[in-house]
Length: 486
Image (cartoon, one colour):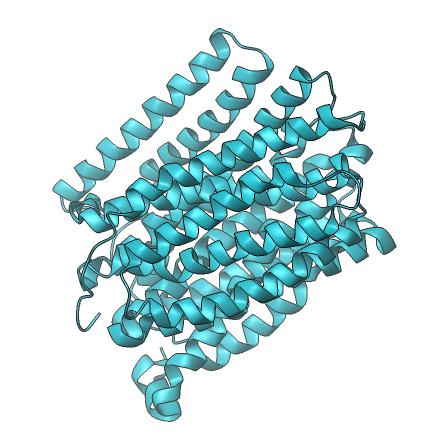
């Protein structure tokens, strides 16, 4: 490792502002990864039409990405220790860019899914890194502000992305939206070369002598996720022994994963998920909230564009435009709540956010079929205010009580559980929507009109609202004092 790439040298060169430059560098890559996870949803109806996909199969465009992201997220602490920040981060950006280009050029649905999996693997590695940096590089009294400022940048570009994506879908077809991540990846690679150190977390030198990756744990975690998602789909489409077998396989795989992680910890190995994390009640409850929140959030990112286009018959361009005001409000809310997170209890802020998010889902039933745009904008803004309360507060409330050495593991595990919830949420929304459409005599592939079709979507939104209410009970347990010197 060259001296100019070390953490101490970069701090000396750039002074107190270096921590902000480092945060900016990883922000750009995180923007690219989040954008790639959500922007494809705008094109789901067009892709479904071209490839003759039902809602459950179409949902794999999103859930396949989520499964890959969920699995690779657990490898981040090991990769950072072995290869350091810069190589880990840059490698993920190269893979994300390759997946975007491949998806844009693909002419077969199988190739599109393969490109989405590649993007998901890259995004999973990147996601825990900003939380690690904030909790290590910033003092407790400024971590909330850093999280809020970081969140503003992360939410603005992906929020504006669907607007641009909707225009691209109408002007150039659904393939064009895959290429949106390319300029972000190029910028992030340049920033990484300039500001991201070669060192591992804490300034230690990256070393390949730290042990092997826990492949057994990774296989078990991935198998559990795949069995869970496919079991849910099978249970709805063809209830029977195979569906039960898949769900039982998920329980067995996740149970084996937990057993294996405990065994690795007890024997001095390198677990993907250190179970000592859950000795902190605040962290354990934060993980519960994170999983339920992920289910509601990512499920809604799939459901909302489909609802606007399939039930309200709005264009793809309208879908993105409707979300722009809400996204601007979200950015402002995060900046404000980020400062509050340094002074107010995380339990209060997260519970408030979940309540507002639940209200926004429940109020979707009041949107009229005629002239729905004003109502959609209003309830989208309400939901984004709720997200603005949750996003800067949840990770800090859960992780501030952790020992310094467990921060990389903690960031990886809580993001893993959030994405596991997200992958489940996308499939759950597709399954519940198809179920309710059939109950009302409607079909996803043959769009109709009338109150019955709207009722099916409204009932699916109510399911998401109920999940948010459930998460409030766990959010009230986020009571932990910040640890000094994190």
